[in-house]
Length: 298
Image 1 (tube, helix red, strand yellow):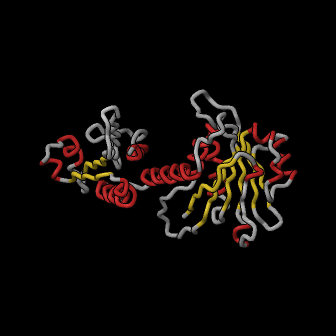
Image 2 (cartoon, rainbow, N blue to C red; image 1 turned 90 degrees about the vertical axis):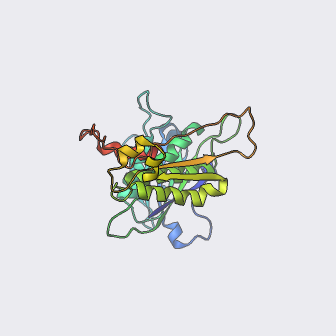
């Protein structure tokens, strides 16, 4: 199981700290992956990074490759990659799809047992959130193989200039919440419906409420099974009553301690369907596989 830890959000390589002085041998042998936008790659002296030599930097800078890997004297894999700028008008502020692919190929498919540092160099603070979520998605929480996973730590470092007013878009605490939330949503999608059904899903919500939401004065109300029928929730009851695991309606409510008339209320409705087959209007073989994603809308 991988732990993804947001370590730093800084303005330059001069402020980057990968391994502190006096670190253990294990800490000094962490795999290093550096990903930079094309603009950053051309202007920043990447030789300042430990274990990165000039030929490796120049190979990518000269355009011979978009990703290069070498091994330092102590056998640690060091990879450099540049993000292409070409994108369609529907893309976000960064090619997060390619960032996700680079991280997956270098730290999930390869070097999958070692601890690692990921350093992402960005053009602007508006790219930080997209980059953070792209990295988080590369390390799924769901695992159901017989071979046990090795516990490993992934340390994420972001380098970006601040806003024009000198402020940052996000700090490490905020980005850590995004990382944890993204991986939790992915775990729900990745868990097959024979394991995550309405009954186990409700228990998942109970656990989250107990650990995180109850201390924040969030109230949990669960209407489950035949109680849905008795309280005339006919839609959800009739759709789900044939299941071995009866449906449930979960309500999480938060009431501000001092509400005022000028404040507006917001209601978020999540479609937490563990697997949407379409019922009587059953979905096609092309449309059904992705229906497991419906539950992530909560």
